[in-house]
Length: 324
Length: 293
Image 1: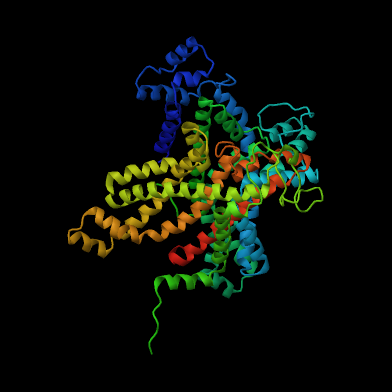
Image 2: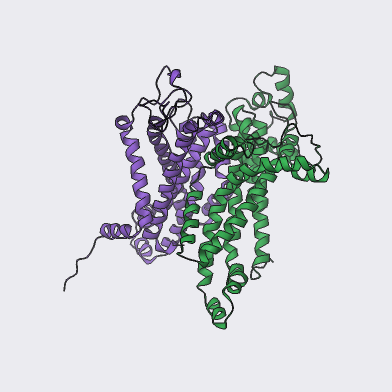
């Protein structure tokens, strides 16, 4: 299942350049390239050969980490993506943690107090959450906390006046291992608003699914038995019901990663976050096709990996599922 | 005693009345549809005055004394009335959503029925393509398509339509698979009806409920994604009054305190999507109680 999907996505990414209007060699060389450069590219990428051979050459290069060079910056695309990956990863991870913790807690509380005022409040907020345009929410957060209250910075990754040593590329890790406390605080402050914006939709979905899954479990016989046994409500809910209710929640978390990546494109654009989402938009707007190809492959790859991880997690939370 | 039998439509209306959130959603959606239809009559100003009236740039609305009387929600950077642009924007955004979902339905129903009805390798092939398309986040795939076919509102609608096709195809396929095994289909085959007749007269009408439900929910995300493409500069191009484009052209001015030009178009997106989500969830409960969560 994994391999055909990855091959399929690579075909889509590959055909991008060939479907785009114009000669692929000229497209890859950029608008102002000389005829010599175009010829060199045509030779290097085998663009005079049949399509399936071209695809083979391209895939072979891609598998060896060579996605070609960006038309705009002339840097290796693999390097450009790897430079930006830590930023997107930190943003996505932070948002997902936020969404999972708050979403699940809200769902459990809502389910254990069904039809209470708290339940209605949480589910009302969640309903707005799933309908929220992330980019607008980002702008609103920026406006309230950045512009009016001035509590948090409105965009970027770290305060530019703070000296910072790049080691792994992960700002949080780098500032911890270099013991740079000022940088850590600064980079976390820049992280808060984008992660809240990005977390909203998955948080709302997780809360809704946790609630309905919990309600389902709470209606089952074994819960009645436990209550009849005299176990306290706390033990019944947190020890027995929650564990059984988490399986659909994990599915939803996995599915939401795709939405999170799409949301990252928008959030990064709003907050000038130097990640892959913003990179792909810039690449699209200047028609930097090789760069778009690279990002597309990267995103599809990330999505497939996340689905794989979700499947593995199932085995841990539900012992009934076995992989042969 | 004779009891009046209610028709299907009456039954639906009755169930609708009991489902408060669906009715609320319907009201919101109807208000937006009315705004879109009547934009010519109710908008106080021209949404795209040409040449731009720059002396009216970024004026606040009714809440402030510095505001202009004829611009209740203030003006944007080019001195255009935000309210009028939102009203005309309803027309652009709603029709964009409808067209995108229409494309998705047309393609999705075609592929879904073919896959579900004929089965075997046709099914396998179509479903593998669907799986591959699902490996992309919807917005990213739309961006990829727009990169190839070019930018603009019409292209964005096509892109979103294509992106939503696999979802629709999967839904149709599963309901066709279920209906195909019913006895009345067997009867039709036995009396010698052609495949097309069976599909058009019997399979499709019976799988219409999930299409309506998911079509409504899809309309909500289509509007959201269309606005997102507009916001990224890949969808509707200025000066088209489209909600996402309006946001992208005005959010940099919040730094100077002009919050209204970026706030109101977003509220319009949020409310229309919310209305459609409520309506879609309600329709699901009403039309297809099996799916109720």
